[in-house]
Length: 181
Image (cartoon, rainbow, N blue to C red; front, side, top):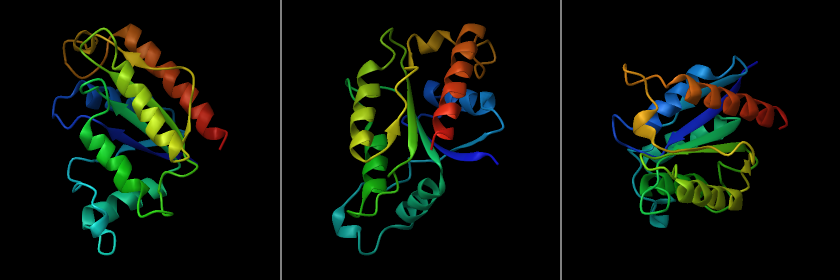
């Protein structure tokens, strides 16, 4: 039976390189992983005052992540850290205190950027935030995809052969990681 994996994309942009990479990871995943993008753009900002009567968007998001058997973060880097929308999603899922939906899930992160650094800073900031929440992050292979504007074929949606090979290896490693849990 396929393991359900929640995929969170840190960019809200319609033509986001990271969304395209997430879709490629979904396409390349084996039958043992059922990956689905869980949208984060509609989540109201986390505010503890709302915990007693949470917005429906929070409730739906928390339920989807809680029902998953793993989580994959695919994100750009904004100002050398993770995007605000992704940090908000992490916060929404971690509250109220003692009710985190992240706990004990196997996780992994892929970051991509038009620059050559591949969103290195965001990758490590995401790891730092979710390890604290008891997400078991896959250590290897690390995935920093630089020059993201240049990795797509002419159709703009599928990646070039070298990137596809790397992403396929990453998904295979993540599948093995998930199976350990």
